[in-house]
Image 1 (cartoon, rainbow, N blue to C red):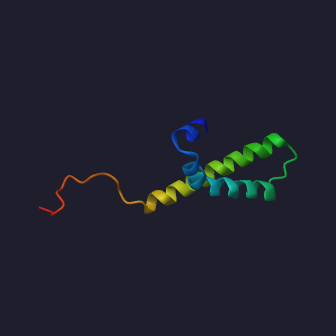
Image 2 (cartoon, one colour):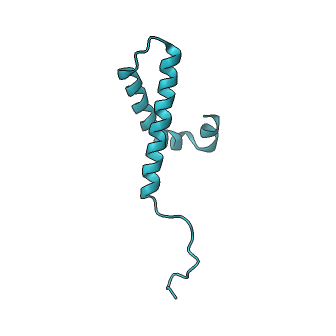
Amino acid sequence: MYTLFRSATLRQSLFNHGPVLIGSLAIAELFYKFGSFLLEALAFLATWFVLDALVSLIQGAFRPDEKPSDEPLGGS
């Protein structure tokens, strides 16, 4: 988490991870009633991790390949 805050600006962090954080909080509030703060906190963090990983995978699938090609732009 420290690396997350140090590697990006606050605006970038809120834009990229904010919606997932809010979704995870909503899921935890609605569904996690374990009777133990520690268990609910761990379940929230796990939910946040899984949702953020899924969003990153989906975004990566739609992002164009950033590896430069060895061919010139005009073809051969």
